[in-house]
Length: 237
Ligand code: DC
Image 1 (cartoon, protein in one colour):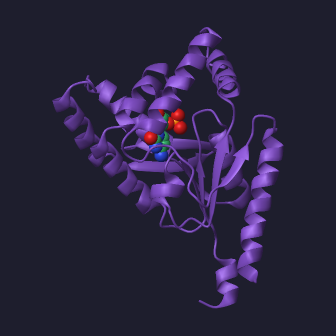
Image 2 (image 1 turned 60 degrees about the horizontal axis):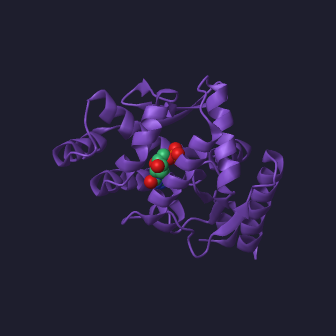
Image 3 (image 1 turned 135 degrees about the vertical axis):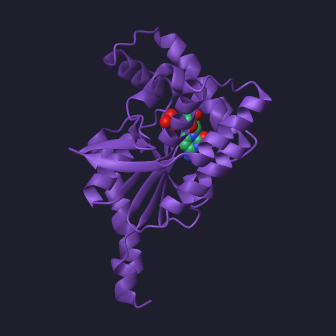
């Protein structure tokens, strides 16, 4: 590849981190700013949980877990921008709002720990990651899905700050719950996501760690764009 085309090539960007660290906001804004494709892998796990709920399956039951993995294998995911809004379509159905319900949220963590579900979704994500010009967010993007990403960002924020954001988001959606309950859930989800046997949440060795506890959305985006520029500059050398 000539140097000019290497410089011109669009980037593949991985954004990982725990729930509520601001990954979605940053990933979406970065994709919009750069004109890239945006892939929210957490929404894919949530969509599997949504389908499992619809089918009345119980994640505690061995036979039902097998069935959930079979459903995951057959799902078709489509990411689209509509009127400047990001939407997720599964088998043609718009599930963007449905996958945000507290029931789906609760089930998405145990569903994401089923090895066969991960295998199916990682394969689908690797296929989506083939394009240049993509921002993909999740937990294992820099380590497993796109180990060769051009830029890997690992976002962190304190559990208290993340719980506060989640509590506020839920309240905006009309769900009123005690902050302490949301904090306890956040800590429990972190524990489960980072101690599960396969693809646990951890930063890739070559990831850039960003702590957004005290940064505004604008500051985070500016910092990420600086990192993008750095990668491009290094390419140009
Ligand atoms: O980011 P989120 O809250 O939408 O993710 C939903 C669940 O899916 C969460 O429990 C973590 C899990 N997940 C995962 O295991 N791997 C990913 N790449 C993305 C999400």
